[in-house]
Length: 185
Image (tube, rainbow, N blue to C red; front, side, top):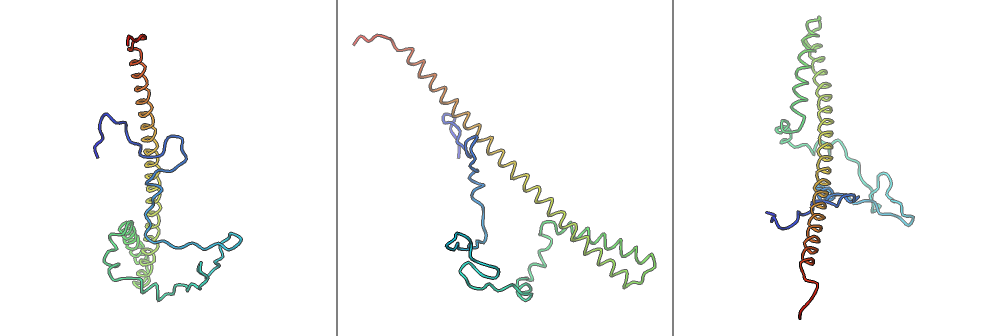
């Protein structure tokens, strides 16, 4: 959409000083919704542990359910998961160093392999969690930046609207000053 030069800028968010959140912040993308518990006569949620809001029992997920949720395609797309490459590369490096070190110190090959796998596993998880925490911080920073930019845009739009109103009032005063104070007919 192209905006004309004659019209004032459109507001993208709430006016300055408003406590209302921007439209894109209010409309979150929900992939799966869960019904909340229905309140009882006292206004509190009545669903307890292991009960749905409607009063029926909820079965706990089992290990079988967990294994059935894994698809073979998940293993072929590990490299596409965020933070997985960093975690795996860190794990491979740590496992190689620890396994080689354990073997050089005088451990047997099976014992060195166990140490290598343990180092791989632990360092992969630590690096993956660290990466995820950094991504969460970045997402929060971007959300703050978007909010600030929306507020600035709203302030600029309000200032432009006020400037347009003042200009219109000034033009109205100038036009009134040009009119003669007398009327011949």
